[in-house]
Image (cartoon, rainbow, N blue to C red; front, side, top):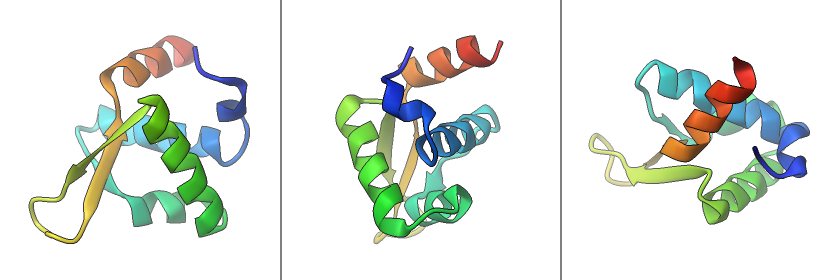
Length: 86
């Protein structure tokens, strides 16, 4: 379903966190993802950029905070995560 490197830490932790948040109808900040992944910020940001480039996650501007960005799994990635976890 996904490239092999996404099944290693912290990428898998990021995918799981984003899956749970999307299941609850939430988009979360990049800072929140960094904290939840429990990995160096530079590492998490590198994985997030790779996932954005691959279309696995999408980012949207925050309505509440003009400086912030919120991210979530893309529709395709959400469907794949549901299949993996089923």
